[in-house]
Length: 177
Ligand code: IMP
Image (tube, rainbow, N blue to C red):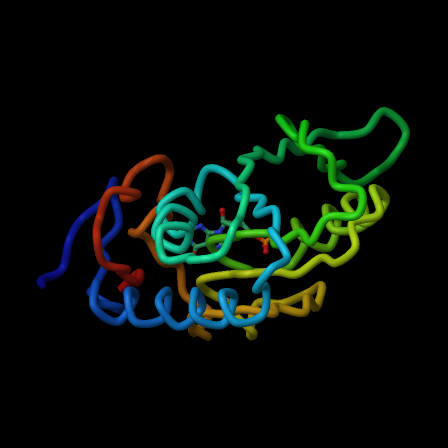
């Protein structure tokens, strides 16, 4: 694997397909073990998590459902900050064991705003599965229950993650040079 160029920036290989697959397999093992007989509902956050969600979901051997949502952020009329809303969340969450699937937790801002909205629906449990976490970037601490990799505070692409729309189809994860 060599350096690649996406738009104006150069990226260097960081995680191989095999390393990613190993961690996704481990997370699936833990979820299979923890959710036996409970029929969890997975909520995958688009766009970035679609490949991680598909690979993880294929490795589950328990009964499970999956829903896909998009988070849109807009400036509220009265609030000064951005408001995050979920588009496409039509599943009934009340009394369900919910597991959020996220590609990466960076500052934690997205999930810190979105989780309280989900808790409002009274799921019986709410857990987070994230492939990547950048602890040095965190502003809003999030408890990640199932984590693939802790990574340095550098921009990454591949395996679903993009730089300005490109790079999602790269099988490995690359890091900004
Ligand atoms: P947060 O709200 O700062 O935790 O950001 C979460 C979202 O930002 C992720 O779901 C990604 O879509 C995006 N993001 C954060 N860091 C990266 C990165 O290194 N590469 C690509 N997307 C990223």
